[in-house]
Length: 347
DNA sequence: GTCCCGCGGA
DNA sequence: TCCGCAGGAC
Image 1 (cartoon, rainbow, N blue to C red):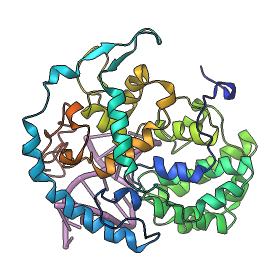
Image 2: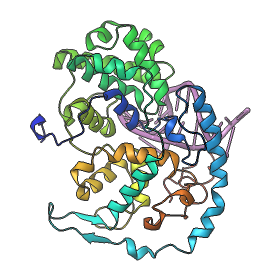
Image 3: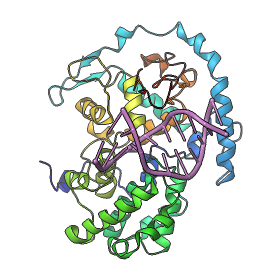
Image 4: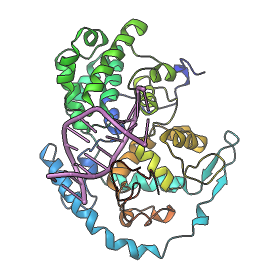
C-alpha cells in the first residue's frame, strides 16, 4: 500500500535533533526535567545527574500530597454526556472529534510548559547531528530498537558506547560479535534479545538496503524488534515522513481516559495501542500527529500517571470523563497471584 | 497471554 | 525487599 512517499511529508518540525526526539518519544524515559513539579520553588539551576534523584524523591512525596484535592473537585465535574462526540465539518468524511479537544491539548501544553525543556542530551544530540544522513538514520533505528522499555539515560549510554566503539553502522554491527554488542548495550532492558535483533537488523540493512534503513512502514515493520510504535517513530524521525501517530501506552491510556478514542462503532475503550492509533487518526488533524506523543508522554509521566493520576493538579480535569475516578490501582487489581490471570485492563 | 530485562517505586 | 512496568515476538 504505502511505499516511498517522501513527497508527502507534512510540515513536520524539521527533525534536527533526532536523538532528542527518540528520547522524548521513549515511553520509559524519565527525563529529569519533566519530572519536576511545576511548583518547585527553585527550578532552573541544575543540569545533571544528581537532580534526577532529588526530583524523584520529590515526586513521590507529591503524589501523596495530591490526594486531598481530589474530593474537593469531585462535585464540580460535568456530566459525562458532555463528552459525547460531535461531528466535525470539513475533513475526510467519517471523522468525528471529541468536543473540547483543542482546549485539552492547549491545557496540557500549558501544564508542560511550566517545566524546563525536556532535553536530556547526554551528548547524543551532538553525536547524532554530526553523522551523515545514512548513518544518522541507522543510528535512529538502533536507538529505537534499544530504547523501548528502557530509561532514556540508559539508552543514551548504550548508544554512546556503540558509537565510541564504531558500532553504529550496519556494516560494523554485522562484523561485530554478538557478545560484544550485548556487553555494550547492557543494561538496557532485554539486552540479550536486543543484541540479537540488532545483528539481524544490521544484516538486513546491509544486504537489502545498502546499509541504509528501510524507508517504508511495511519494511520497517518486517524488521525484528520493530513494531508499530517504533516503526512510526522511525518514519517520523528518520525519514521525516509522517505515516501515522506514534502511540505508546501513555498516549493509549490518556486518550482513553479523555474519551478520545473508542472501539469502532462502540463507546468502549480501545484495547491496544494500535487500535488507539487508528481511532485517533480518524479525527486528529495531521499537524498534531507528531507533537501529540511527546506532549502526552510528558503529561503521562508527571500528572496523568498510570497509577493514581494527579487529577487535582490537572488543569483540564473538567474536560476529562475519567477525572478523579481512578483512585487506586487502575488496571490490574491487587495481583492475586502470578499464575492467575491479570484481569487485564480492567478500568 | 507470556516471556524478555533491569530498575524505580511502594 | 520485591512487585510491576512496557514494546515486541511468539
